[in-house]
Each structure stands twice: as structure tokens, then as C-alpha cells.
Length: 225
Image 1 (cartoon, rainbow, N blue to C red):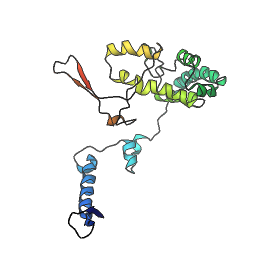
Image 2: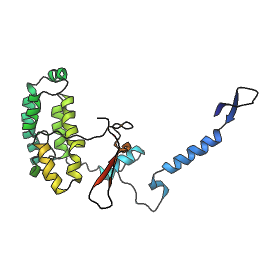
Image 3: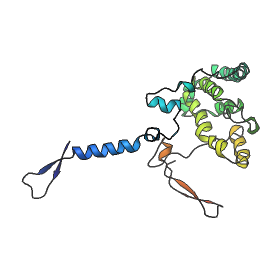
Image 4: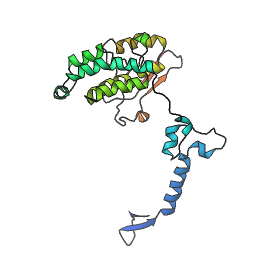
């Protein structure tokens, strides 16, 4: 690889410098530093993650075979009973109207709340339906098959919206906030977008640092929305 650059006092406008060796050494260094630990150290336990190994061109059959039953007969019947009213509602639903409005109408949102669609995976004690991932995906299919935009509204509310409270919140936080977002008609959101990051949550620069006394957090950063 040759790079041309201005050189003061040279006979020509440009000096040509061969940087191939430098680039090769630099690239090799980066590749080695990025090599997964499982290949750097024989002492580490093997990584049996199905998806991680799939990206490496390897299969971990122990993770998928024999293929597990997604739901037993009782769970399937429960999911079916939840989906039936949703299907009936969408039989008379016109997604074009929502498209014209630029959002789901108030009547549509009210119906989604009444059918429990905003709390599909939340525990029953917080007003949710306590569905498994299979049940959640089934309900998402029922909604998304008619209006994908509405499915995204439901999905964002429950995934990056209140899911963090469910997974990491204290008991007090769960008792306070989860009923609000599962049955209380409060939409949950996640302040994700920053000037330097979009859907890549790993690139977020905003930080909340706990004080030395442990009584408060100091937050630094910025958000677009």
C-alpha cells in the first residue's frame, strides 16, 4: 500500500511512502487483541453459547437437540384463549387509519390496554399475564400480522421500556412502577438516543455515578429526545 503526501522542499509535489509493513503489523496486532479468550487461553472453560459459536461457524448441538417443547398443552390453551379476542378485534381493524393518523388511535390503545397487551410478560402480581417468550411472540405475531407499527409500540413498551425495572429493580420499584405500565395506562420508554449513538446501547456515553456516601447518583451525558 502506498500513500502519497505533501513534502516541503522535495522535487515533486508528493513523496510516496510504502506503509504496507506498518499496516500489516498494525492489523495483525488488532486481530490478535480481538481474538476471543477461548482461543487465547486453554485454561478457560469452553464457550457453549449456541449463537456465539454459530457466528464462528461452529455448532453446539447440546444447546438445541433434542429440541425443547416451547409450551405444554395447558400453556398453549392459555395462549389461544388470549389470542382469540385479539384476533376478533383485528378482524374489524383498519391499519390504514392508524397510518393516516401517524399513530394508533385512542380507541385502539384503549383496546390494547383492556386486553392486557401492554403487560404480556409481567408477573401476575403486577397486573401482567406472565407469558413465556413463546406466548409473547405469539401475541406479537397476532398484532404484527395486521399492523407492524402497533406491534412495535407494544414491543418497545415491554422490552426496552419497563423490562429493566422487572429485571433489575428493587421490590419497592417493581411494586410502584410495574402496575403503572401493565394496567395503569402509562407508556414506558428508554432514553436511548444520544448525539453519538442510536440503537447501539453499548455505545451510550451517559453515565450515572453513585456518590461516595451511597445516597445519590450524579448523571452526566445528553439525550436527543
